[in-house]
Length: 112
Image 1 (cartoon, rainbow, N blue to C red):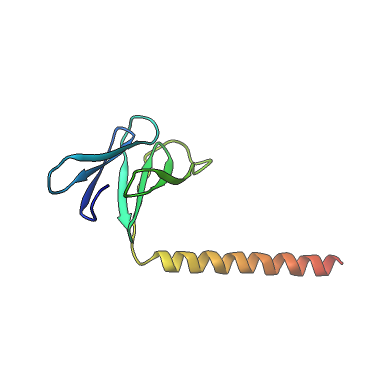
Image 2: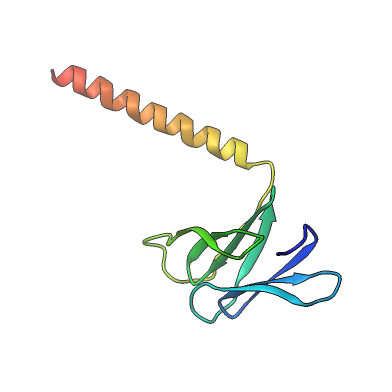
């Protein structure tokens, strides 16, 4: 299992964990295709993108926790970023969901 100081590498549709002290491979996880893989770690979560999909991997084992095929967006290069803005993004999504629910409820009561 990788230590907290593991180095994660994305290459040819695969993510690898390397031991930073020795450079030895700890685990390897094949994702999709054989192209570029973008990786980022945030708050202990490991994310990777390749061939138009986003994956969340267990950083200790490389096991895929979930994947999102980003349907309708093609198979192009996907980049990801991580940082404090996720709170604002989730708050905006929640606001839009609530506005949509309120609009649907208002439409239902007007029709009834």
